[in-house]
Image (tube, rainbow, N blue to C red; front, side):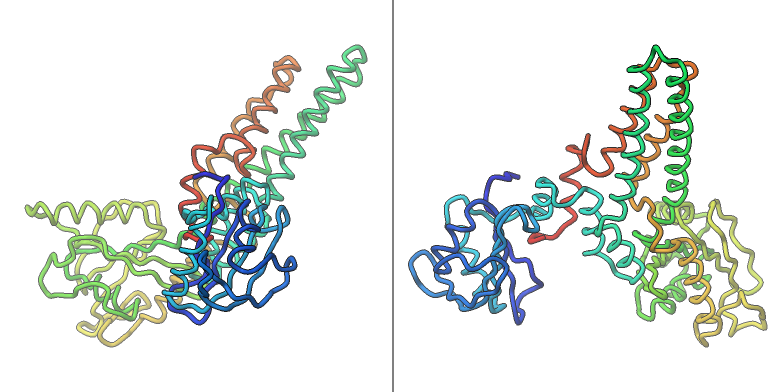
Amino acid sequence: MTLDDTIAALSSGQLPAGIAVLRLSGPAVRAALEELAGGVPEARRAALRLFRDAAGEPIDRGLLLFFPGPASVTGEDLAEFHLHGGRAVVAAMLKALTARPGVRLAEAGEFTRRAFGNGRIDLTEAEGLADLLSAETEAQRARAFRQSAGEFRELAEGWMRRLLRARALIEAEFDFSDEGDVGESAARGVRAEVEALRADIERRLGGARRGEIGREGFRVAIAGAPNAGKSSLLNALSAREVAIVSPEAGTTRDLVEARLDLQGHAVILTDTAGLRETDGLVERIGIERARAAVREADLVLSLAEPNAAFETLETAAPVWRLRTKADLAATTGEDTLSVASGRGLDALLQRIAVAAREAAGDPAEVVPTRERHRLVLAETAAILGTYDPGRQPPEVAAETLRAAADRLGALTGRTGVEDILGVIFSEFCIGK
């Protein structure tokens, strides 16, 4: 990825469409507009222009907007071409743009990566934007929007300011080492501040699982013996034919997933292979995957037919034991279901929705949402835990706080993130 090139891409939706928006960002924007659009329009004001290729042949007539850098979304000169959304129109315009010297098609996430590289956004805002683009539920949208708007960045910058102040107090001890009362007062103040900062970080870490569930979805594994009704329940809760249903035992050999939006929260239902002893190699692999899904789930629905024993499951998640096929036996209670009659299904969906909402927490809560966030904060808290001015010389204590600040800087992208940038920005579509 060369950041000195000028990049072009379709930034709107799938073609054909009523309108297509093409973006152009980089040092060659002004020259391209002079040649293809007859000049550079007034900044941030839409202008109706005729777009031509290098040979002067007209391509389309549409709106043109110009955003001069550094006050643009990428921090560079940026233009938007609003064209008719036909495939041939867009292809011709992209061909004309990339025929210009130094202009090429953008890679996935390159516009956003340039915004990060030019200081327009930090890494947490970029991640929030990626989550906003992929959000499927209202709760995911709300949490992602807050992160993309900088709430997590503001929290991290507040921690950085507190670390900077603590380091300044230690340096005051260096400067006034001949005045014992100043050094002692500074040491006490720093110790209290470091302890409070570490406690604050650990409190946010306590919400990391809630943040991950809110971002990725609440995982519900459906488990039980063969023919317990697992696939039928998955289809019924999903209101569509997701899994194959058959009276033959062992029909489900692999994990089958369905994503639901329950009251604004993402829920991932997973149908699993029937749990039993078997000599079949393929079925054994499916059963092992089923047990792994149960171990990794946030909630397990353990199903059993009337009068059958429930399977023993190894999981730290809550397990709800549910009797299926209630229409075939005289079973009663809130934990009995019938896919055929619909008995208990609405109540079960409601219970799952409540569990998902409680597990994900309040979308307005600023918590880590990715494994990267959790690791950075955990490592920062661990470094702060080694701060011991009673046993450490002031120079060592100051170095401990510097190391904590450097590690925390990786959260927003200030330090030590080059190895993960490609992974993060590959999550974006081309044109964003």
